[in-house]
Image 1 (cartoon, rainbow, N blue to C red):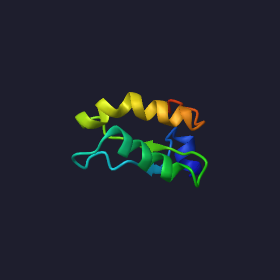
Image 2: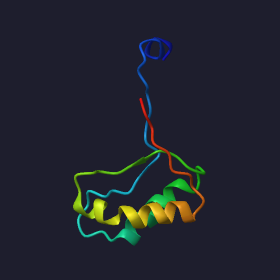
Image 3: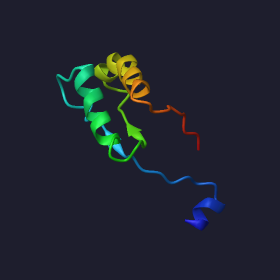
Length: 78
C-alpha cells in the first residue's frame, strides 16, 4: 500500500451496491437496497452503473433518500 501511495494510486472498494443492473427495479427498490446495506456500516462507498437507464431515472430519488437518512454525499477524486 505504501508503494501505491508513493505512486499516487488510490485504492478503494465499494461498501454497497443496489444491483441496479437487474431489470425492472423501481427507484424505491434501489433506494431500499442501498439504505439497508449502508445502515449497519453507518455509511460507505456506493456502486451504481451509469449505463443503466433505470439508475439514471432513479438517481434524484436515490440522492434524496440518502440525504434524508442523514448521509453526506461526496465526490471521490483520485
